[in-house]
Image 1 (cartoon, rainbow, N blue to C red):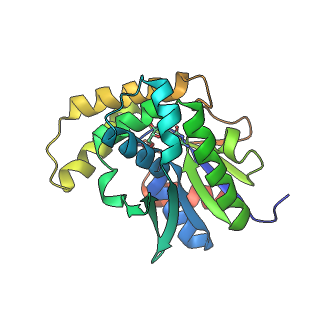
Image 2 (cartoon, rainbow, N blue to C red; image 1 turned 135 degrees about the horizontal axis):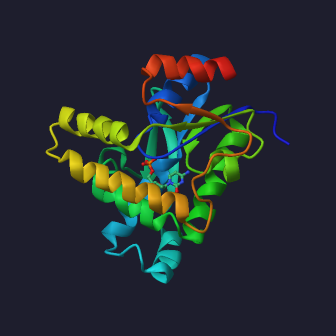
Length: 219
Ligand code: DC
């Protein structure tokens, strides 16, 4: 048993997990762990190796060659892929879609879950992802399932990309989100679902501050 405290935040893409988890971590002085970024770093590695998501065996073998670690710089999580800071390369739709595909692989999950559990043994964490409350940290003190309607999530993503000057289409983003929800929720291993002891928070009609306060109240 570890004597650190963990807060688990799970939910579908675009529910506001990372924004909200980051603020909660800052308020509580905990470390914020973005597990999606680790799956994205692995996806980037696989894309660079020209692997397709359906090439299961190749992924099982190749993922051994990806050394993924994280460190913190000025409170920000930096993901290192074989020593390279890949923070600036993993927030694309291409990498997100590959991550959704390659994260079904048991070897990929085994490797990254170990890393996530090791972090939570060392530090008090606010960890967000898809399977934190159900698989990675089943003993987390507080579990939240954060969600929002598909069109709200698509609009948020669209606004984020547009603000970064990336051309995109709202209807394509919404279709992508639907596909990722389906993949994440129906995969065989650790599918996205609300843990029995998780509290559901729907952020569709909430501001970020309201959602942060709702989670802090639970803590
Ligand atoms: O949260 P995100 O969009 O950065 O995650 C990218 C993909 O990684 C997501 O579609 C599914 C996968 N993922 C996962 O399988 N388990 C996690 N704990 C976090 C992310």
